[in-house]
Length: 244
Image (cartoon, rainbow, N blue to C red; front, top):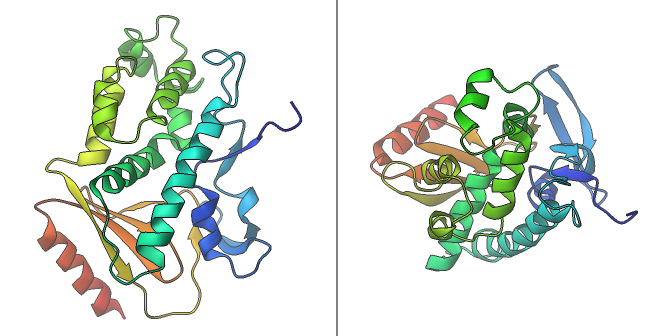
């Protein structure tokens, strides 16, 4: 049991390490709750101890979800490094595109904020709604059960076909993976400024209902754009230019 992972990161460390200013894994961190900036190590932020530990659905392997996330993160980090950070014009295969979209859709669903919504303080209306899918009313078990299934999928099509994923969670993945009309990626390069902060509990950044901003590196930001909203994206870019 001594080798079981305890610190479960809901923002992957392979992303956080791109913002470090030394090899020890330190970065500039701004806490929006306290308005205090400080230096933190990637081990200690965007994580919660035993967040995904699950002795109900996986009694013989309670850290299975965390380990499955580690496997998924390994696949995605390779794609980001090879297709976004190391070459000028990376072309994603269909498989890579689908894998990335589902991974980023999971970023919100796997977060500590989401886990709290399914925790002990879950609203009564939530418990009533989900009672169809979790008879005993334990929404934390419900969340982890579906999370454990989704993390082993590699596309929304797999999620949709999965017989054990409950329908509300398929709808969540549809919304966050496809949007209303589908989504696509745009990589932009940050050319000004010398210092970047990682913002507490505000990652990724939803600019509006159609655009999600995902900082990947000190120099690069990935946008997930909902189709039919290019005009909104161009408007955003113009506003950023005007602020400089």
